[in-house]
Image 1 (cartoon, rainbow over the protein chains, first blue to last red):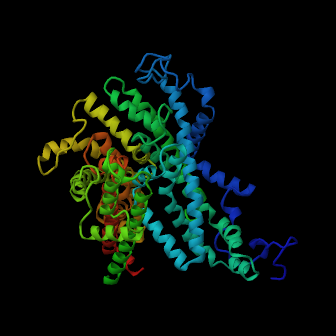
Image 2: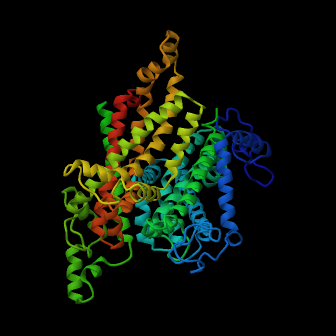
Image 3: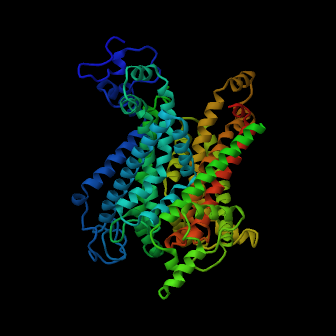
Length: 313
Length: 314
């Protein structure tokens, strides 16, 4: 340990310190951090047909959300662009709803709320959960016990119930919807992170960093976090579909963004009343929702199988 | 074994305590004054203070929690703010339909999952495998409320075979009850089957790769006998775990399924109580729901350790 610090006085990378027996893979080999890593990972990923299909669906849904304005044939909020409750036709590919609004346009715009809430809720849960997991795993003791017992408690709640209760606390609106959905997903992130931190913490390079006087926070975020990131990314990818389903469930119960916002869950709920004479109002938004979820689940499974070192043969 | 049971029971009690604190805190964080809600529009300052004191809202938050948890441990969940019914009564009445739904769904789920997981593993990488696993991921990915509507559309509106909604206790009138439960149980059961089928497949493949199976095969045991006699019983152990891990998801799915089929269960009670700010009912339903989840997890862990002695040591 002759040169523990670099020219700027920053601690050297663990890899530069060249300590032997680094059992957990260095960050670069795990995720898409280096060029060679990406190519190798992509080759594994591309072999998984389901995952590639999932990726294609995800890209398509993202495109639908981003280019909704260009793709939608009508204004999703404009009433009476067609006769109410028309079944699918050439003029309205997905028919019209009870207000004579174009269903296809509403379904296309619906991708926005689904993706925004689904992805942001998971990101929020990830940031909070990972921070808690890092702190609990690194410091251990009472801090660990308190944080993890609260996580155990949160974990026991059915996610939708917790989200409903949170909606009651935080109130309506998209921002609050994101918070309410996120709460149910914090515990899994905290658990996964903590478990891996416990293993990484014992690695020689962490010990080395501590010995040369690197502060706890720097060790946690610069040396521990990059080495536990792969399973966290996988968790994140796996949870987005659950977050979207939760959002749709809340919207279905009438706790989502208020009408006339085009939201898949609310559209399905609205269509229930017309199931006998105009089943498309309920069924078609559900198809969009289902295809999105199937795609995300396949994509998540594919990422898990190719990214997580523990799943890799 | 006794030590294992005691430590698991201890953990369970710790989780239940945390859960009770979380629920209590959540309910106190909900904006709006339940005292005002109970009093209605016309009241005096004096009446307000009296009711507040009567409900215990003038004491410290810790005292309020201790009184609350003490009452609950004594079996007293309080009265509904809204219609003054006993919460324990309301929750009990709502719990039975939900329980019937969840039990029926688990049965439906296993009836679908075992054959499809089995065939997928025995004919790995065949059309059967892709077909049943594709089916599994699709039914698992369909949101329960939407699947329920589709089933109503096909089963009640189009075919006219099943009633679209309503609930009868199985012990009041068994066959009509089953008739009404069929679509909801199919809704939730297919979700569960999607999950279980994939696990049966992978655990069966793993078991089939073990030495004792190879030994049996070398001895000349036929493939079918191998699977049914030697592999399946071991491959089914993880299913027990899935029931435990997914019981919460099942209960959550039941909330939405109940709404679709107008079943007067826990889900509907919870949602309407939250919208009405009926604190005591919300506390009661969530507490009982989460207690059920934690209790089932404990049971599953104990069953699992009984089925698989290796677990007990750790």
